[in-house]
Length: 377
Ligand code: T4K
Image (cartoon, rainbow, N blue to C red; front, side, top):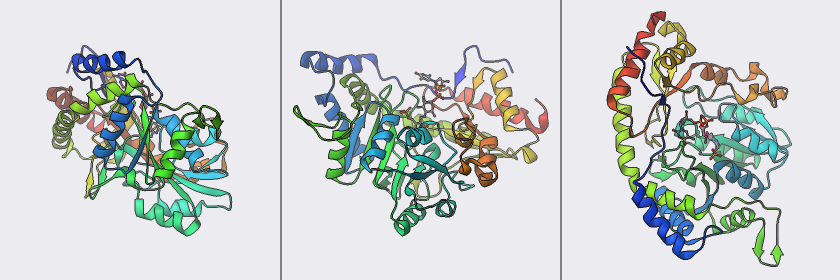
């Protein structure tokens, strides 16, 4: 098999027709209003609230700043328990806010925080739980909420991957105290950079809105120590145009995932990471796990073989956050306490998934993977 002429990346941003974007931009130009709670931002917020099925939503300039703001809105201090199997933004949001991240191990199937391990990690300094819906697969929502209720803790969800995920029909942003969403260019729905916080009540949304605007409540009153987390009008215009194309993008991704499933289904030692029943997927990633003992070669071997064919798969998430130099000296980062996360980090691989990916390319990718079996490639 000859390598692809151009790199096949793990994702490609959904690009709406340029005319659709420029038509909306004309309204922005006419208004002379570029940021600070403009009309486009209001339109996008309302559209997303309906799409996501959440009562309250506040848009941000990126998901990481949104996460910082959520921690401040809930006044989390001391220690917050989180997963090591995530993107650096998750523990960094805690550490940057002066909160100590405490890593707890994950569930071997969902790859999200294991409530039993969370409960073991609670100390008198614990104020909250920060779960991550990895690949859009929801955390054990009931399990984590029960632990939180037993110990009087807040629950924040990093739903960077979970745009559009529904649990028995309920929007993912309706669980916990606050849920963060990312609208980065690499996400199914995007505003180039962007994000949001979903919450349940109006008072919390007002607090969030105040915090994302420097704590200002009127031109002469600053009520709290805020930051600048506002989404601008150009981002919102792009988001509105992307939203119009989303249904088609999802249909294409569904079809590609079906192809992957069919082509890899019979390959012993390779499994797709999938949502449990009752969950509407976010169609964000095509994650597989490679069991070296059964497959006969490692995840890293497959990653390399794909790379040799110009297919740039990604090891989301290797290394574990608990192995970063800035966290590895924490007691909770001890590898012996995180065996499930460690195995997952050695086995997972995210394969290319985006609407404009040709089905033939998916078939080639699967053939390359199958050819690695037993170390043949
Ligand atoms: N929490 C979690 C669990 C997250 O996964 C993330 C972000 C966050 C929090 C923080 O949310 P934000 O603050 O970002 O809103 C990418 C994304 O930059 C990052 O947003 C995302 N998670 C993470 C999982 O993936 P990298 O370092 O892998 O990005 P990069 O530049 O290598 O891009 C991946 C591939 O996408 C490239 O190989 C090619 C393609 N690509 C990328 C961009 C930016 C394009 O085709 N076009 C583009 O414009 O982090």
